[in-house]
Length: 422
Image 1 (tube, rainbow, N blue to C red):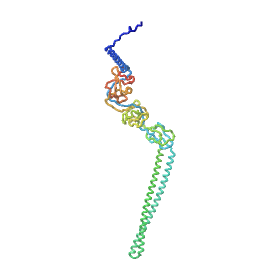
Image 2 (image 1 turned 90 degrees about the horizontal axis):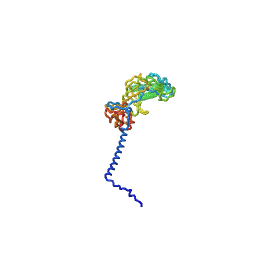
Image 3 (image 1 turned 120 degrees about the horizontal axis):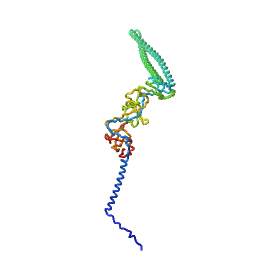
Image 4 (image 1 turned 90 degrees about the vertical axis):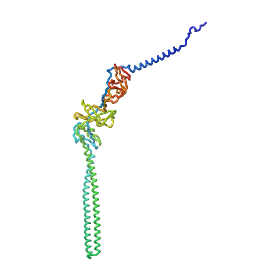
């Protein structure tokens, strides 16, 4: 006989309501504890999970005071007046002075040989001399014509006087019935003809005088025009000799000796040693902040000089803007061309502001966050930085005077909210 499994079965009772609540409570409690543990570990990883040694940090105190927004740039000494001399004609150049030699104002420095220009000058001068001779000969001929016209007028005037006297005698004779009426009429006709000839001669002389005056004026204008041509060529020939515009020294040759040069080609430079300026290379990012008259502190060979910006270049070259600085006081004998220097340009002056020494935290923190030192911890906080100078940084928001901040690089903090300082 086969037995069933009833002996192995056991009765399972339906769970009560209290048991169900207990299970649900345990489940929620387990989930809550898990969340707390996860949050704790996450919070720990972003707060006190990082320890940094104090001697690896730079810590500074927030203070209140004046802030000079400035930049530090490099530059060199240049002559305030260093003219470049150019060739004005096509030709072959000969240089008479070596670079570095002293020169005097008006001293001959170079000469450009231009045979074509010399030939043009000789031709035009010859034409001018010929025109002068022709003008003198024409003047003599005009005087001769004027004499002929005056003679013609004098003859007509004499004939007129004779005709008047003849008519007067005829009138007396006709009154005495000495001559015929026909003879009297002939005398009247002779007077009328003499008056007409005189008036014609007079107008002819006046017209001839006007014509001669016009021709003489035209010749004078032609002669003056040719004289201007000769003077211009003489000026161009004189410009072939390059002279020093100032007293100083020859800077450098800009072309080779005995080389062929073109009009407008640079030949050499002359340096005026009586006055120097500083030439600064300012990064393009600060170009908008530059203004003429801004104060500049210059360090040159261990000496401190002051000056102000005089000119600012209108173009950008190699991501830099060139600014010229005129010295307030300087001894020209102690300055040398192309000396290297360091300059601090004062861009802005602010009074009574919160500031802290400048450090790498400005760039590593993006200007939006900083770490305040509280006891042995560095706590991250949101801030707003303002003007930045060579030594200081302005704090607009997020700081109180007397706070201590980490001003070194913040990259090693890895954006932790709290960092322990050992």
